[in-house]
Length: 366
Image (cartoon, rainbow, N blue to C red):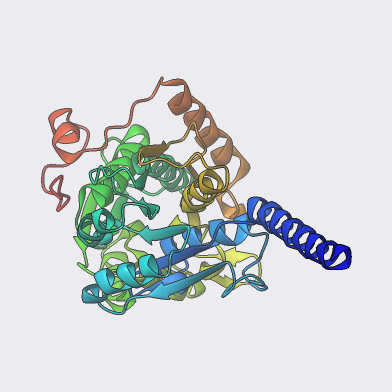
């Protein structure tokens, strides 16, 4: 009897120790996550790529070696928008600790799905109107970062002695978010060159670089000096055309967006057609949300990543930008952080203040 009791006690002790170890492991384990993207996927070299980098960084992985992919995190790309809701529901049913969606095109789908899974945590980037207790909404001060690249492009045109320079903007799908990019770009340029000319175009698509390439060719041929694209994968067409023309000796530039797109513009050793890039650090948002889940401090709220929070900025990787211009742009950046320069994000306000042309295609409507 004593031997039997001893055995039982030993078994109970082992089970208790196992449970204790399991709880300790659970407390130290990283949360699981799934990134859901639109058709452009994480290879868009822009917005989705930045979101993915934040996830990789959180798990200690790299683009080349995503060791925990398929174990702790993964990504699913929707080829069409009618897959947004099914993809959200599938990820929610699989009980990931955090589900991440990129871009305002997911807003309607998430608004429908999130209340159906009240215990599921979600992050959406570029949206601030869902207002659900289980949805963290990350927004960026794109107008501030775009102002910086506008200043950089204008200073470069000035340094090149371009008379009456013209500038272009290519947007993806019209929205208040993309309007912020355009408003900042125009205001930044006009702060240096008040009489500069502007033209814009919206492709109504995130994944058709051929549209941007054709438009960029027409504009460069008509004398446009630099084009800033905020159009996801579509904007890669602008870079492709700028590469082609700069390799032929034409003095035109592309300006990258979201990620540093310098490498995408390389056409010769040490030469890139991407003068600078507006850095929208989407990776900061994905990593921030994952940290909040890990630390059990996650809550449904709007989190703004502005210049002061290092949420937006500009790339100084291209040596042809020049140290003097980089210095001046950084001085402008400091003034934005200090509140000495205010960048207007909406078209209506910017027009009313006389800071942008009246004939742009930007919209403040969702």
